Length: 139
Image (cartoon, rainbow, N blue to C red):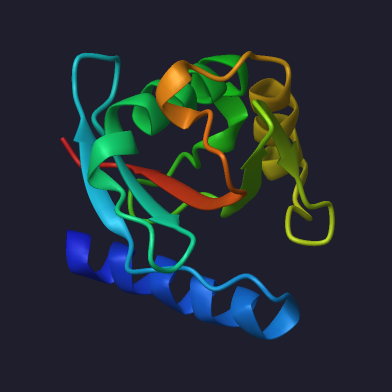
């Protein structure tokens, strides 16, 4: 399965999330991470109408820190995406919605992310909702 399948999966989750909450997400952006033990692909979607490009570096760094703290978050099979993680950036803090983060792996990520201070690019004046999903790429 290619990267488009992965982004399509996150887009469907974003749509499902819109139905269960008032959050609306924009189109997900795909990012490939190399340099670790395994290549990883992230799909990141922000609140609808927010441009992810200026925030992408800080979001990737924040997600990478969460992945380091929660090694079980990534599934063992490369084709299986991890559970989506829904967080909110508000007033310089990260919070997670328990109703959207039902798996233990997603809750681990939320806990890891809420314990870290937000870097300046992510300290926005308005609430910013973020949906992240990751998967291991085949070698």
